Image 1: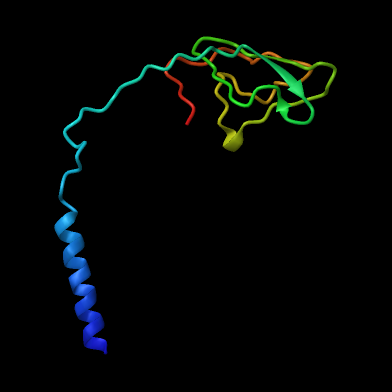
Image 2: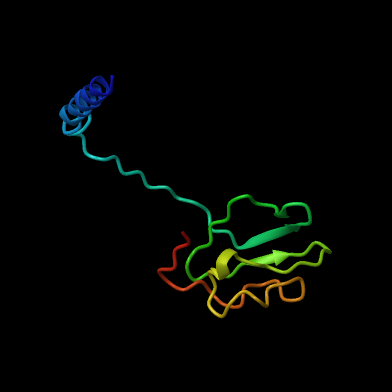
Length: 110
């Protein structure tokens, strides 16, 4: 019983290793490059239920962002202290709704 399991496992591994280095039918195709153009977000509306009105926000280099409080009290936080603005994000609130300074060139959110 044990010997048959070992032989079955070895045969399965051999078959896997034979097919592993084979190229797929699309292996010779060059990758397709697509240019995606997105609008830069410069204004966000505060929503007490969702945080802001937009699900995804694209902030461009050398731009500032303003949060419209719409009568609500708010404070901006970023995960793991990854603020995309020079000068930090701690001061962004309903009292100071504009990012402290512009996004640095070459900054990319991950």
